[in-house]
Length: 224
Image (tube, rainbow, N blue to C red):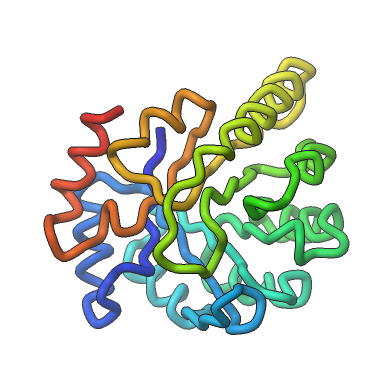
């Protein structure tokens, strides 16, 4: 199972050190949450292409970077993030009008295409798109709303995705990955793996002031 730290809990004055500590600990995938101050419920602004470009330069080409676009205009702005150095752009099904067109544009540009959906969105809105998606991100909290607990009720959505993806693969189709984000820590990491999740985004469970990234990652691996 791939572990992808979300850097939102990091001290941004020490971001380079956080990247170094993550890579040294064995992390090879980093998750970048982009909020435009408009689309998410708390109107938060995080960071943009300039910070991503600096991260890419710092970690080099060996680390996989994805960006989760919690924005209103992903169809118009995705190229900024691709040019900044991300490998995968993940956009919300709730915010994109022509997802097939967006995925085609990303693929033509040499970038992977991902779809994310909120806890309130039925999985049936995602299933018809699987054939052209490299990854589906299941939100197990509401994006942009702090202090939430993991929502175990997303299990049925993950299992529905896993069943559909396995059928797609059996027919010679794309091996779409399943990612989960929201409240994932050592105590529930094995649970979501058993549902069929392949990539887990972890924020404070990895990057916090109580213990090192290496110590936290070792605890997660032990739980798995």
